[in-house]
Length: 74
Image (cartoon, rainbow, N blue to C red; front, side, top):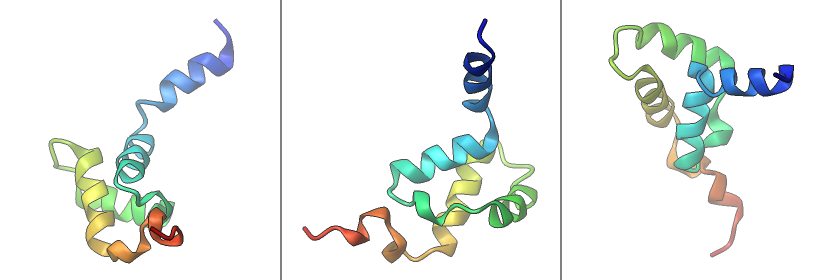
């Protein structure tokens, strides 16, 4: 198999990728950063769904005004 194909499949299962995906779905992808991610990861180490728990921490910490959609005029 092609190396890039294997890497892209593995990336889909990475916790950080899952967190980014959840934030993206909620329009908050720009609030993700690795320093907060590492901090939240340690706080959520016992969570059943770690990706969801970490994403919720990002959402709690960031004002909804930080949404990806803020720049658009409706």
